Image 1: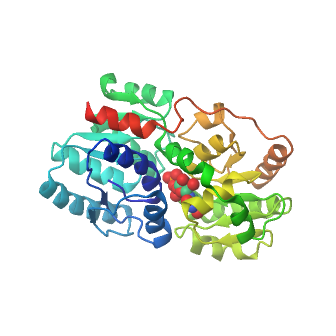
Image 2 (image 1 turned 90 degrees about the horizontal axis):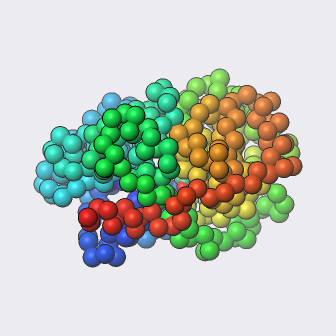
Image 3 (image 1 turned 90 degrees about the vertical axis):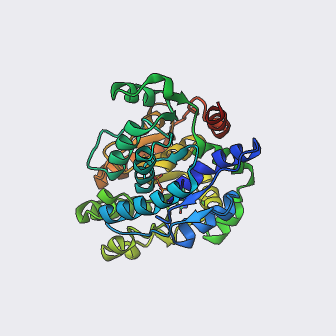
Amino acid sequence: MVGARPNLIKAAPVVRALRSSGERPLLVHTGQHYERELSEVFFEQLGLPEPDVNLGVGSASHGRQTAALMVGLEGFFVEARPRSVVVYGDVNSTLAAALVAAKLHIPLAHVEAGLRSFDRSMPEEINRVVTDVISDRHFTTSPEAAEHLVQEGIAVEGIHFVGNTMIDTLVRFRERLDVDEARHRYGLEGDYAVCTLHRPANVDDRDSAAALLKALGLVSGEIPIVFPVHPRGRPSLESLGLLDLSGVLVTPPLGYLEFMALMSDARLVLTDSGGIQEETTVLGVPCLTLRDNTERPITLTMGTNRLVGRDPDFIYSTALEVLSDPPRGRIPPLWDGHAGDRVAEILHS
Ligand code: UDP
């Protein structure tokens, strides 16, 4: 079951591994992300099969969207009677599919279980906690996830440390990334940075958004920034002056291969994305996470990530620091390109 951009990147290796072992998993797309640049492009580039069904749910408030997702998924699950349901990550589609599967007594597996920011003001944290508590199998990306699950009363037998399926996708495509083409397209000759922002606490809260734009203004005085803007934050960021920042090149969201090519040669990444904290760690690119917490602490302890919050001066001074002395990270255990194979093998057993 997939619904949003990061789900597609995490699901592709599992779908591939299941298919190569002779299974034909049904692929449900809820349509939570429906824009071509957040959805179709990823199916094409990642070689995901056409979804067996697209529920076309689209955007709405959390309550309305989750309700619509549940109605659509319930109809499909009742008709298709799947042997099990696999959900990915922490978006509303993940939560809705988990609730519906659990109530229909369909065995439920969660890929990327046990991550915790311990910040319940984040909608993703609610989705993670609820999905985990009703899942039967928990596939984890890093060792501390199992500790969180056990502390929350989850049976240890159902927890499987398999590695990171999002990184499987990166490992698969890394050799094929066309950095020259990406540089050429955006007229980038020397060093550059990349930025993404889409968390509600950063783009919907006007004070936070204004502080982050101030930070981008300061950093872009040192190094040009390419900023592919997620549609959910665009109106708010533009109304606060994003387009007036002369050192910031604003683009639409990029396809996976273009984005990875650009990020792989960047000197610095500024982001509030979950997945990008992990990808920069594997690419060895310094990452400043524009948040107060992260559910992916292994990227701080082993990787190239730094948690910098929203204070413009602190972000600027940390950017200068990592530009002059880039952190050297290591790749976390089992982030080796084979997590999807492990998930498929365990699902078979
Ligand atoms: N991504 C992309 N194009 C972009 C921005 C991001 O392909 O313009 C990829 C990114 O590399 C990562 C995924 O989308 O693999 C992360 O998605 P997002 O930040 O939307 O979600 P999160 O990880 O925060 O849940």
